[in-house]
Length: 128
Image 1 (cartoon, rainbow, N blue to C red):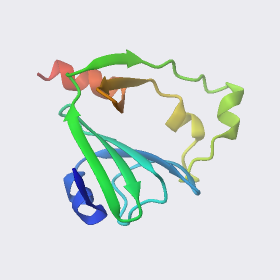
Image 2: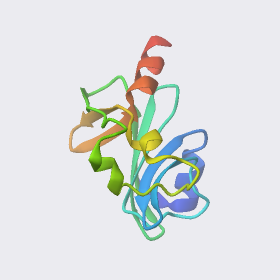
Image 3: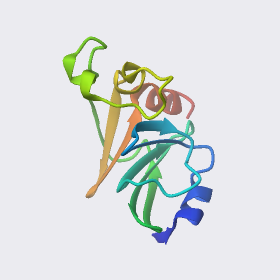
């Protein structure tokens, strides 16, 4: 679905979002303005996932359910892993390890890829 950021933000109500821009890596509520990034992932505790392709105020919005498609689990980086040293987290009060030292599940549906923290995926599946 093609939409605007204002409409997409309404659709993202209650979601946790993950994106990276010039300020660093964000894991937060949907921002008020379209972030300066091309991809934003979002998830809800009830098992919904979304992937947004952002181009200015134009947004291509796709939403699905976590329990559909092929799931793969990533391997989290350890807090002392040198690769984390290059991560810049947007919120200076947040340690980089708190954002990247989390295991994510990857859901593939056709050519779309969604991500969600493994713990969130497990909770949403056990609630069904």
